[in-house]
Image 1 (cartoon, helix red, strand yellow):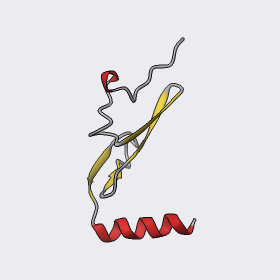
Image 2 (cartoon, helix red, strand yellow):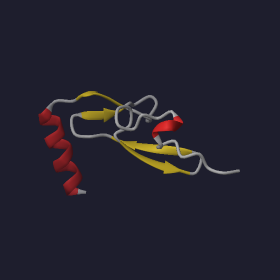
Image 3 (cartoon, one colour):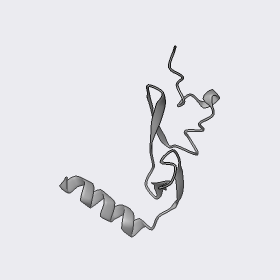
Length: 66
């Protein structure tokens, strides 16, 4: 059985809109979001809404500390 690359635009995931940074995995995929967006906490498969710029700065600072 061959893996389906869900990150290809023709496979159902619009990774430019739904999932900004799509990474294919065997049998699944993971999403990453551009600044100002967050991963949907329920599905973990798409980027939703804009988050305030102050929160983006906080997230960036927190990530750098890790």
